Length: 195
Image: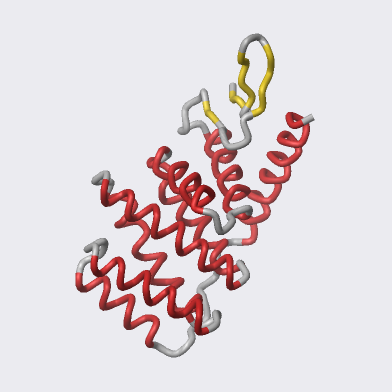
């Protein structure tokens, strides 16, 4: 059983825009697929507000057992996003890893580093100089706050200094198609519950 953000308050139904609660175990394949579809949908609707980034990072940190799946979806969306959204997705990564560091959740820091190292060069070379400076600033923040060790920071700096590289395949077409079908179903259910 799951709740699509509806709550019963004083005997009336009220819709909660930013809440999706799961009342079934995440090891269930259907529930995990739904969670991933929901996350992909939320990620595609990211905006420049701190609330949007905070909400998504909190969502990821609350569902830590699914961290690798979240990061895989994040990685896929980074490659396909317009330049301004790429920066927002990097800001999301920043928020997640900094909160993970504060809460001693090393798993997200470790899990994010490889994909971040993979996407940083294609992102850096696909954006204008204003966004490049912001990416350089993010790396400086990670260095100053010791989010990644000295070797990790060195690798990130080397990656952005390298010539542009083509991104690796984001994910297999079958997985993307399956996630898209689940996402479409999620959108339809949300539309029906909003009425």
